[in-house]
Image (cartoon, rainbow over all chains, first blue to last red; front, side, top):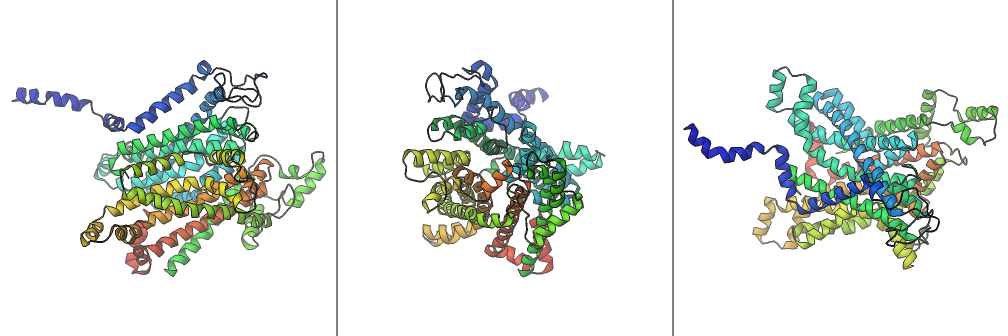
Amino acid sequence: MSAGTAALTLPNAKRKKKVGSFAIFWRRFRRQKMAMICLVILLVILLACIMAPLIAPYGYEVMDTSAIKQGPSLKHLFGTDAMGRDIFSRCLYGGRYSIAIGLLSTAIALVAGVIIGAVAAYFGGVVDMVITRVLDLFSSLPSILLSLTISAVLGAGFTNLLIALAVSSIVIYAREIRAKMLSIREMEYVEAAKATNCSVFRIMFCHIVPNAMTPVIVAATMGIASQILNAATLAYIGLGVQPPSPEWGAMLADAKTYIRQFPYMLVGPGMLIVICVLCFNIIGDGIRDAMDPKLKN
Amino acid sequence: MIKYVIKRLLWMIPLILSVTVVIFTLMYFVPGDPARIVASTDADEEDVELIREKLGLDQPYIVRLKDYVEDVFFHFDFGTSITNGSSIQSSLMERFPRTLLLTVNSLVLTILIGIPLGIIAAVNPNTWKDRIAMFFSLVAVSIPPFWLALMLVIVFALNLGWLPMMGIGSFKYYILPTIANSVIGIAMQARQTRSSMLESLNSDYIVTCRAKGLSRKGIIFRHALPNASIPIITEMFFTLSGGIAGSLIIENVFSIPGIGVYLVNALNSRDYPVVQGTVIFIAIWVCLLNLITDLGYAFVDPRIRAGFTGSSKKRSRNKKEVAV
């Protein structure tokens, strides 16, 4: 008997063995053409930015006094700025800042938000009430205003910008994970974990949180997009990365001075922001559909 | 219902109070000495000390906090600017109408375009109309509003010369800022309208309506739309509070002298009383808008209204649901 069933189930079993939750997710994600295209575009941009010293035709601080304020040409794809620096090269270097800010600030907010939300949902009672009230407090200010205020207090600089952006988006993740955890907390397997004398920490972060991450991961992908936008906005106002550094928003702030005579300077960095943010948004949609088809629409 | 309104109104007080305390505390830790900013660069130590005393900066934190909260809440006095000594609340009052005008214009545009777009997408799901509407909204949320504003200026003000580039004046001056400020709102509104309309169009009562032989229009506007209205209304108020935040940035692009320009100028000149006052002022506005949103729900949805006017048992159950 065993030989027969083994022979029958072997091909199936072999295939099933490989299918982890990530593989299922990836199979669903791969089917979405738009999301895949965006993923490829984003990877290309990311690689180009990482390898900027190899790819960029000029250095980001190289000033060419013979080519000041030149329009886009084959030699200078996006043109040159008021100091004769090649805008395309600066965009490549600038992408490092912009994308790093998006990823890092989201990561910080995600970790902090998950911990705060998990603690609130798991302990409930007074702890939950206090945390929810504090979150209410934070969400009573629009996120851009909050990050604006915090970065004004901390002063300009890369780390301060990260903190300012992260703090203003913690609320989103804390709320998402709290809502999801409230329902999971009551499930039998959590009770089983308690019965086997798992520590509170282990129950929270090894048993409940992984099962509550779906909405948070989706929110985080979209979060990266909005952080890139917010970082650009802050830089534009003069609070983010400071001008000599080639961050996309800061480059736009620089170029705004010449909007009358040399509007082309605004096009390159802006288009890159739009493309990156759009890609993150579409990938976010794709991840949502792939992780939980029920959430579609 | 009245009880609910009063409860929500009372809850506003600690909320605004704590926002004030948080902002004040944040500003307290700002590096740099305000007295030194007020004093001219060549002032000696004694003069700085005098100014510090005059501004009450030599008082301990708790005393200053108490004074500030008292001023804000009992006299509606946000203090004076340290760069030019003008009263902050009169500046805010003078500038806020312009910001509000921009915000309300954006809201109107959002409602006029966003909701119909969402409805069109929802009644033709997975057709080209739906795809275009959703792709538009995806692109729209990905454009930095200030960059869109700059692009609009380049095309319509500089190249075509149809509209003024910056400043305030006749309604022409508000066209570009309103468009730039409302694009994100339109996109969000369209998405939200589409998803809640789809949900209500897929309900059983819509099938009943069809079976009854109601017209397509009647089904969409008399049955599906009212039942889908709560998320749509929520989104509308998000647009309004988000619109205030958005107009802070857009104002700077178009040099509209509203509170956004006021705030950013204050940030750049390190005029912290102004920053503090403006942020608290906006926070109060957003809290008010949230309150109106919540009351709006109760107004639109009889279920929520019943939850607060019915028996106490029902009320407590409803509260639990709201809390979750």
